[in-house]
Length: 150
Ligand SMILES: [Zn+2]
Ligand SMILES: [Zn+2]
Image (cartoon, rainbow, N blue to C red):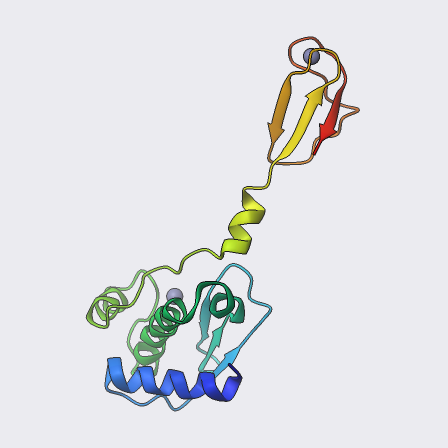
């Protein structure tokens, strides 16, 4: 899907769920990392993370667009459009839009990555979320030297 097709999809969803036309810009932004999309009020632009379409599919992306359209339509009509605003929460419900987007599978993988270490003396296994400096840490049981295992 390219920006032109995205623009068309956003317009269609706007008419279908908000009964209003979308007259501004929708673009893919591949620099977005953990967020599925965002609305830039200054530029009246909706940005969509292309990785969400690739990893989670069309349904998830439609949800993200509807969520951003809630920000957009409130903003351009001069209403409060922040996540905490009542008008925003109401519009999310009315249009059956998601409050949050799902985390990207590839980002979740990164978060659940663990580093494993083993004591060279007693064999005790350690799992750590961060890399450990093996010269500074020793085994909690026997004070032996630890080394990384794959
Ligand atoms: Zn939002
Ligand atoms: Zn040990």
